[in-house]
Image (cartoon, rainbow, N blue to C red):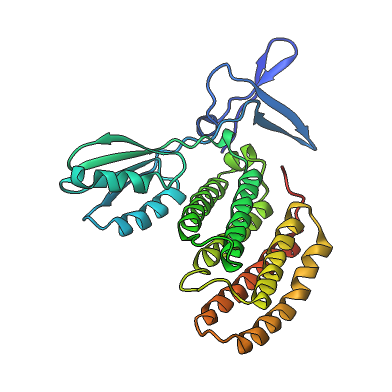
Length: 316
């Protein structure tokens, strides 16, 4: 940031000017208070009321009627924290309902302007209102609710859970993308401090969210093309797989080293139990379902490994 001259101010103080870029990045203005803290042979200056860094990134997305492609491009622009997203195309009003439904899949995105050739979307995310830890716990609760739906279908308690699972898995994806977006914002030192995250936190949460989202995706697909009720042996295996997932998540939330180790130790044993069961099952269609159970077991192991690699004291 270069050198600054010390200026005398009265009989007991001296003044040093602050770089304009630093003031702007931290959302400060004339008259705002800052903390001045002695650090060894230097001083540390931090904002008293820290504000999120302003974002001025803008991106144009060409829309040709392919809503699936639009969603993929919005995921990229959203996670990469573009402040303004312009959807450009022809006769956009004829696709308006589909476009607005797609935008609704993203937390804090709002349509600000509409015309036949241009739709402007603004990122209205307020980092002060977000807790990464609490949001991950919310995702975890949704995933456990999905597992309950799946078990109710497998045991014959309910006739159809596909619609419920689709709805809940959309929520998992929506909140996961929100966390990816926030963690990407944390590459900015000011926003990282505002969110009270360390560099290890960022790597940890990114990895865990990836695997939790995959568990949700596997659960959504498990009941497809399956005639319930399923054999009790399979229900027991499903319970064990979800216990693996729950124990891995609880190891992270409760900072429990031994619980994470148990998940890793049990992973191979449960793989073998699933393989043994698959050889006995009469219905071919259950082959895909048993593979999904193995995938969840694998993802649970990876969630436990994320904790073992970093062993974080999570900030709630």
